[in-house]
Image (cartoon, rainbow, N blue to C red; front, side, top):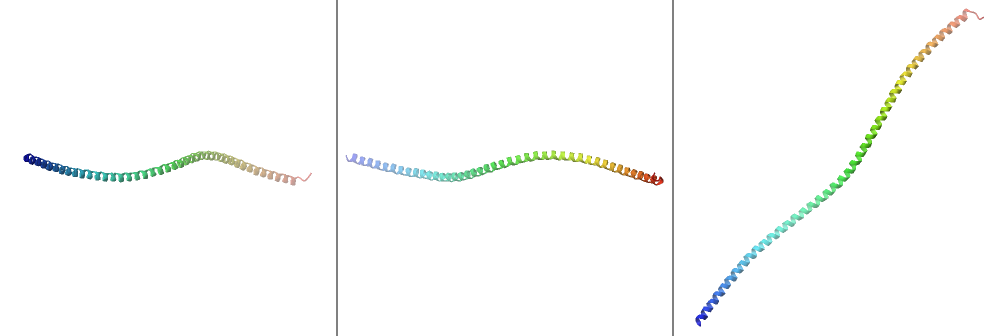
Length: 156
């Protein structure tokens, strides 16, 4: 029985050494796996932090872009309103210009007509003045002849 006892102790010892080797191997495997998992975890946390930072920066950029777009739309609306006002004023001024050009043309025509009439009237006046002068000279001449005849013929 001592042999069985010795064999059993040896088997138990081998079993215990094997078990310790397995536990040691599992511990080393566990530590290695834990270190890899821990390293991967910290890598992912770092990537996540970087992603969060990038996301925050992109969000800030997006907000700035949104504000710029809103400002641009506001300015565009204001400029559109001003453009429409200026366009209407331009149209009104063009219509007024055409109206004034028509009035100017009419006034020029009237001026030309009046100038023509004035010229004709001046010619008539000059002709009439010349005729009056001629008639006055004729009258004076006839009056002189009458006076001469009265002097030659005493009053009868």
